[in-house]
Amino acid sequence: MIAEFRLPDLGEGLPEAEIVQWLVAQGDEVALNQPIAEVETAKAIVELPSPFAGTVSTLHAEAGDVVEVGAPLIAFQVAGAESSEDAAASAAPAAPAAPGGTSAAAGAQDPSEAPAEAAVPNLVGYGAAPRGTARPQRRRRIGGGAPSSARSTAATAAERVLTDAPHDVVAPAAQELRPERPRSTPPVRAYARELGIDLALVEASGVTDIIRREDVDRFAATLDDRAPGAHEAPADTAAASGDAPRETRIPIRGVRKHTAAAMVRSAFTAPHVTTFLEVDVTETTRFVQSLRSDRRLEGHRIGIMAVAAKAVCLALRAEPTLNSSWDEAAGEIVQYGYVHLGIAAATERGLVVPHVPDADRLSLVDLADEIGRLAETARAGRTTPAALSGGTFSITNFGVFGIDAGTPILNPGEAGILGLGSVRRRPWEHEGAIVLRDLMTLSLSFDHRLVDGEQASRFLTIVGDVLREPARAMLLG
Image (cartoon, rainbow, N blue to C red; front, side, top):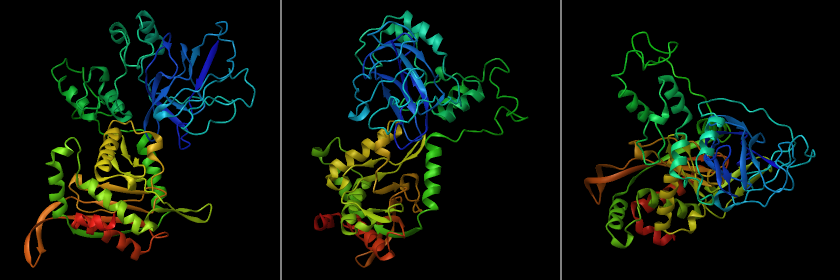
């Protein structure tokens, strides 16, 4: 029988997702829970597990296509009935495990024969399944993926081995006949198309194997000795005096679209106020250096960011108004008894803010490890939708870019965000003398509906005191 799987809601009610790459092809034997595709939402790149065990019969979309939630994504030939594309899918199979330990609800009847109330297959833990049986039309925004028929011919010609192993463990022959689509972001793919460059020929320079714009430029530089006209920008965008395009138009979608909408909503919903405090963090920098030289902590990267995060957790305990949210619909202020600490991370796909759950319960070492893990996952584009929602307070570190201070915008739904400036060695009054000290500026933005200036000042003073004298954490802990 033919069992069809529709794109599920991957969380936060996001209406669509882009197919980054297929991990299977037509004719492949697929095991239950085996990853079948990577899809990019407005928040993250997510691996979809297969809700069925069987043979891939149809891929309804190609890599680069934008597919709406509820639209057909892939069809399987499943054992248990006559092989016919007209056969209706029977009862839903057992729910497989989805990424992060959740399970995937499965099963969908053929839309032409399913009852009106039949549910669309959905990954449990990624949001509610859409209602109804109508098929939303797939909107093709960016092409570029190899046709599924061409890939299926190559895939079926290769002998598949270890079908229960992870998706990247295949026979060498299969890897040669059906190469994976190069991983890159939509703007980079568009840029490569403008230059007439096949991304399959470009080598990624980073540790994440994601091809970046500079990788494309590096490859383009090697083509300068080719025949004239072999590497030219399209005529409608090339400058009259050279090959550089005069304009580059990049579709607004993915993380950039989500971030823009969230920032506009935040800026025009919550009355922002920002206050600043310059702090002598010399003792903290010495403390961090001593921890790095401690052989017992080898393998743990504890930096000033982790100390600041610990200070924030302690300060939120003393000033809980900054760990709250404004519920307009209910007419209530929600005050949290836990700290889900958001860590803003700049990635090639845009700004994301994953959070550390129950950060207030973690030791300094564990908190540093979690921050490092979040940053690494975010840079690789592997942050889950669940990690990008539910934060209660955030930290952003623009000091890594050499910036001293700023006015960070609140993450929607949160009462405060702390910005960490760069640490600079400057003359400072210390114990009655002018000496060189390590200075940092703290920038606190807060929602004035929830937090008064007095509460914000006390919070910032506590954070500053801990960074000025880390031993003070013993009094607050």
